[in-house]
Length: 331
Image (tube, rainbow, N blue to C red; front, side, top):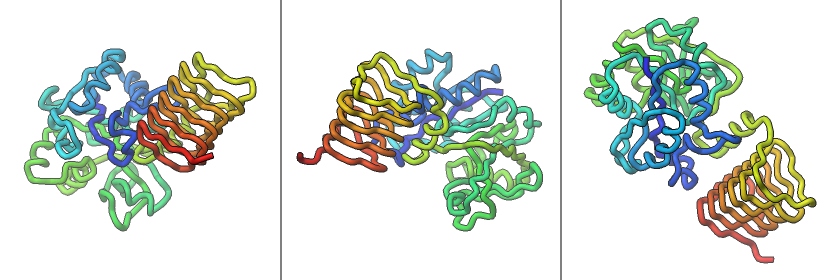
């Protein structure tokens, strides 16, 4: 079996934050999203590959070399050119060969052990499923109906979900099913894993479900990104920084090197502050601030601010600010 982490999406729902950086390399606490996945994968002692695109290849190269992971790079540079997930899997298979595959979405954070997941793999397709507990929320995902551990129905983004159990982007696929990817795409089917699972069911393929509890985050929005940080950031990581004696740090937070916390500032709880930021007389909580950003006289809550921004004399709540933005209110 080979492990294939899918990290080739352009993450348009999180633009402008992800316009110049791949979503799997966004920080959650003191690690990247993909680091949490790789930690679970490394318990398996299997060959690991990351599928990405030409545009993001340069961002992944250093990370891949550091972690001993090989990149499979599709030759696309934009959302318009992008292969879908099944197309990207087909491309990876053309490079790596037909085999059993553990396929993991590179922007998902989940609580279960992949080792435990594979203990339930018996040579039939196995998908990880999670109860989101809300029919309205289930409409965004692939909805699963099960009898015991067997999938009996699958609806991709249905208008009227039959359950609140959803597929979470973790699949164990035997080589016989992997070999069907060409046939599936040749028939003109939609290039998405959910529709592929639907198609397999219609073809009479038996599919198993692995149910898990605790947490699952599909990092597709600012809210889910911030909630994931709140779940996974357990303790503070403060590097070489300057903190005013009049400022207060409320754990847990991550503050990267070169940052200055000046004046009467309050940082945290649940704040990520990137390298070389300047925060002065400001409150930042439940937020992610990327590097080289200046914040003065402001309150930032449940917001994401990209790198090299300047925010002055503002109250920002539930905001997403693109890189190099300069926003201020007059004194």
